[in-house]
Length: 144
Image (cartoon, rainbow, N blue to C red; front, side, top):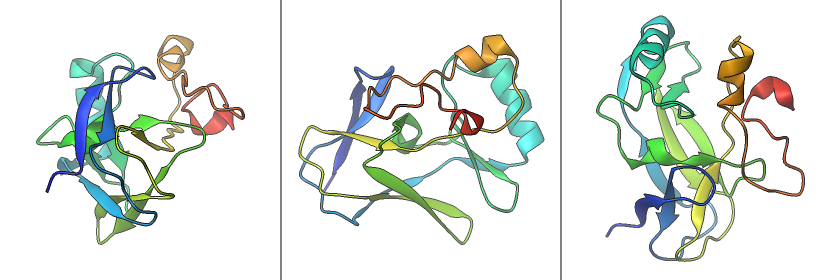
Protein backbone atom coordinates (compact mmCIF):
# COMPACT_ATOMS: atom_id res chain seq x y z
CA UNK A 1 0.00 0.00 0.00
CA UNK A 2 1.37 3.41 -0.99
CA UNK A 3 1.97 5.66 1.98
CA UNK A 4 3.20 8.87 0.35
CA UNK A 5 2.58 11.01 -2.71
CA UNK A 6 4.55 13.80 -4.40
CA UNK A 7 2.68 17.01 -5.07
CA UNK A 8 3.15 20.77 -5.04
CA UNK A 9 4.47 22.12 -1.74
CA UNK A 10 3.79 25.52 -0.21
CA UNK A 11 7.30 25.37 1.24
CA UNK A 12 9.31 24.76 -1.94
CA UNK A 13 8.42 23.34 -5.35
CA UNK A 14 7.35 19.73 -4.91
CA UNK A 15 7.13 17.87 -1.62
CA UNK A 16 6.35 14.43 -0.22
CA UNK A 17 3.03 14.07 1.63
CA UNK A 18 1.54 11.28 3.73
CA UNK A 19 -1.49 9.62 2.13
CA UNK A 20 -2.39 7.81 5.37
CA UNK A 21 -1.41 8.50 8.98
CA UNK A 22 2.14 7.38 9.79
CA UNK A 23 3.39 6.21 13.18
CA UNK A 24 6.44 7.57 14.98
CA UNK A 25 9.57 5.59 14.10
CA UNK A 26 8.10 4.21 10.89
CA UNK A 27 10.42 3.60 7.92
CA UNK A 28 8.66 5.43 5.10
CA UNK A 29 11.06 5.58 2.16
CA UNK A 30 14.50 4.73 0.91
CA UNK A 31 16.42 7.54 -0.82
CA UNK A 32 17.27 5.97 -4.17
CA UNK A 33 19.41 6.99 -7.09
CA UNK A 34 22.71 6.31 -8.76
CA UNK A 35 25.64 5.93 -6.36
CA UNK A 36 28.60 7.87 -7.66
CA UNK A 37 31.56 9.98 -6.57
CA UNK A 38 31.00 13.44 -5.11
CA UNK A 39 33.03 15.01 -7.93
CA UNK A 40 30.90 13.39 -10.65
CA UNK A 41 27.66 14.27 -8.90
CA UNK A 42 28.59 17.93 -8.37
CA UNK A 43 29.74 18.28 -11.98
CA UNK A 44 26.41 16.85 -13.17
CA UNK A 45 24.43 19.04 -10.78
CA UNK A 46 26.20 22.17 -12.05
CA UNK A 47 25.61 21.15 -15.66
CA UNK A 48 22.07 19.76 -15.38
CA UNK A 49 20.82 20.74 -11.93
CA UNK A 50 17.49 22.33 -11.22
CA UNK A 51 18.08 25.70 -9.60
CA UNK A 52 17.21 25.63 -5.92
CA UNK A 53 17.02 21.84 -5.76
CA UNK A 54 19.62 19.36 -4.74
CA UNK A 55 19.05 15.69 -5.34
CA UNK A 56 22.42 14.69 -3.92
CA UNK A 57 22.71 12.77 -0.67
CA UNK A 58 26.20 12.23 0.72
CA UNK A 59 27.00 8.84 2.23
CA UNK A 60 29.40 8.46 5.16
CA UNK A 61 32.04 6.83 2.91
CA UNK A 62 32.23 9.97 0.70
CA UNK A 63 30.15 8.64 -2.17
CA UNK A 64 26.84 10.23 -3.15
CA UNK A 65 23.37 9.02 -4.02
CA UNK A 66 22.33 11.10 -7.02
CA UNK A 67 18.53 11.16 -6.91
CA UNK A 68 18.40 12.89 -10.30
CA UNK A 69 19.49 9.57 -11.83
CA UNK A 70 17.08 6.65 -11.24
CA UNK A 71 15.80 8.39 -8.12
CA UNK A 72 12.44 7.95 -6.46
CA UNK A 73 9.97 10.23 -4.69
CA UNK A 74 12.32 10.66 -1.70
CA UNK A 75 14.33 13.18 -3.75
CA UNK A 76 11.41 15.61 -3.32
CA UNK A 77 11.64 15.65 0.48
CA UNK A 78 11.95 19.25 1.55
CA UNK A 79 14.15 20.64 4.29
CA UNK A 80 12.78 21.98 7.55
CA UNK A 81 14.68 23.29 10.54
CA UNK A 82 12.21 21.33 12.73
CA UNK A 83 11.85 18.13 10.65
CA UNK A 84 9.27 15.40 11.24
CA UNK A 85 11.50 12.72 9.69
CA UNK A 86 15.14 11.68 9.97
CA UNK A 87 17.57 9.98 7.65
CA UNK A 88 19.25 6.76 8.73
CA UNK A 89 22.22 5.31 6.83
CA UNK A 90 22.55 1.53 6.83
CA UNK A 91 24.98 -0.42 4.62
CA UNK A 92 25.36 2.40 2.10
CA UNK A 93 21.63 3.03 1.85
CA UNK A 94 19.61 5.95 3.20
CA UNK A 95 16.22 5.36 4.81
CA UNK A 96 13.67 7.96 5.90
CA UNK A 97 12.02 7.35 9.30
CA UNK A 98 9.32 9.40 10.96
CA UNK A 99 10.26 11.19 14.18
CA UNK A 100 6.68 11.56 15.37
CA UNK A 101 3.18 10.59 14.23
CA UNK A 102 2.33 12.26 10.91
CA UNK A 103 -1.24 12.88 9.80
CA UNK A 104 -2.71 12.14 6.39
CA UNK A 105 -2.02 15.07 4.07
CA UNK A 106 0.93 16.35 6.13
CA UNK A 107 4.20 17.10 4.33
CA UNK A 108 7.27 15.09 5.33
CA UNK A 109 10.46 17.04 6.08
CA UNK A 110 14.08 16.14 6.75
CA UNK A 111 16.99 18.21 7.96
CA UNK A 112 19.06 18.75 4.83
CA UNK A 113 22.42 20.38 4.80
CA UNK A 114 25.39 20.94 2.63
CA UNK A 115 28.71 22.22 3.83
CA UNK A 116 30.31 22.61 0.44
CA UNK A 117 31.88 25.96 -0.41
CA UNK A 118 29.48 27.94 -2.56
CA UNK A 119 29.46 31.44 -3.96
CA UNK A 120 26.79 33.89 -2.77
CA UNK A 121 24.56 33.37 -5.85
CA UNK A 122 24.49 29.63 -5.25
CA UNK A 123 24.08 30.09 -1.46
CA UNK A 124 20.92 32.13 -2.15
CA UNK A 125 19.39 29.04 -3.79
CA UNK A 126 19.52 27.23 -0.43
CA UNK A 127 17.26 29.61 1.48
CA UNK A 128 15.05 27.77 3.96
CA UNK A 129 11.32 28.47 3.69
CA UNK A 130 10.07 26.17 6.45
CA UNK A 131 8.75 29.00 8.68
CA UNK A 132 9.61 27.11 11.89
CA UNK A 133 9.88 29.29 14.99
CA UNK A 134 13.61 28.52 15.20
CA UNK A 135 14.25 28.57 11.41
CA UNK A 136 17.90 29.17 10.56
CA UNK A 137 16.88 30.58 7.12
CA UNK A 138 19.28 28.33 5.24
CA UNK A 139 19.67 24.66 4.35
CA UNK A 140 23.45 25.05 4.59
CA UNK A 141 25.18 23.34 7.51
CA UNK A 142 27.34 26.38 8.26
CA UNK A 143 24.25 28.53 8.83
CA UNK A 144 23.39 26.83 12.12
